[in-house]
Image (tube, rainbow, N blue to C red; front, side, top):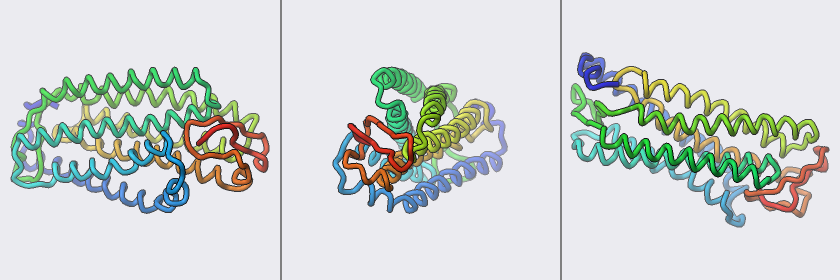
Length: 299
């Protein structure tokens, strides 16, 4: 999207596109609140009162930080008579929150994949290196984008801020980097999960594999669409799916851990005295559903 392309649009068309982005943000907030209400009982039953560990901390950060992010975005999108300087500040805040939130979600999904591998140190080391590289690429790209952002008054007295120009290829790079990382994760999950399922039909390993593949595929599709919109979408709409993608990362990563904890507590898993529900973990699963256990670690 270039400033020339935006200026060439009729004011009513541009205003309609900005309004569409606002509707998308409001819809994303509705999805976030609805999912929170639907999974609140899982959080109470499987998170509250348990010993805190790395996964528990990541889950609560991933689960609750989007509410602050979306509050910032709502103000950015709906406030009237907001100064251009304040728009720039708000955009910087929620952009960094966005990339940080996605990184937290990716960390949870990485720990989940680490769990599926049987807590192999080589797997964790490899994904840790890829995670650091992916995150660093995103941070550097966004740092280079911020000085290029240009704000103007929105047309027809439309509420909110209007990002009229910027090097949006730099915005797409963090999402592309996360997408590539997700492809590696889902590829490993599919390969290793298929091998494990050949020898184990336990409910916990099935949950790790099935939900992981489902979540990854959805994230891949949304990420690809978002990148296309940012780079080559209609002028005035580069942020159409940014907040949705951030919220989806939060929802899927927290659901992934909540579902594993719920499955691990179901009989006969709950009969094992060796279960301690916090990641990282060492999975030791019997091949029979009725005797599957988690041993020697935490999830």
